[in-house]
Image 1: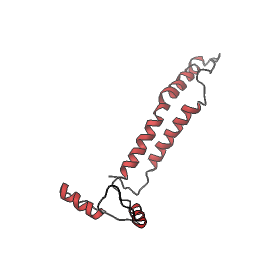
Image 2: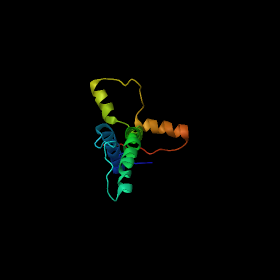
Image 3: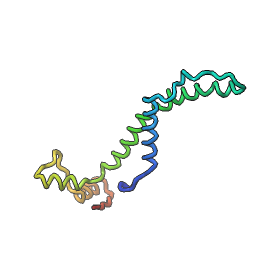
Image 4: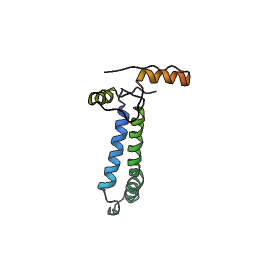
Length: 126
């Protein structure tokens, strides 16, 4: 189980890669169809560059949006178990009530223990 308060910079890297792929797809910095075939000794190798760029452009960059959505959902679902006491206090301060009443965190931990038979530790931060 991951620590909710800890930041995982690998996820930031994945999101940056996803954003880069989306930008490459939309901005099209290299037109793979306009690369001329060079007439040199390295014809075999250089003729492969448009093919490799085409594969990267038309296949690899298309995973940018799904990758970004998957990482974002992972981060979102990791926060579901966290109780947002700030929102509760702000709602209480405004005299507002929750649309779906939820018991306080200690009460939810007690209900979980009763339902599952397992004790869950709670920690209220600042």
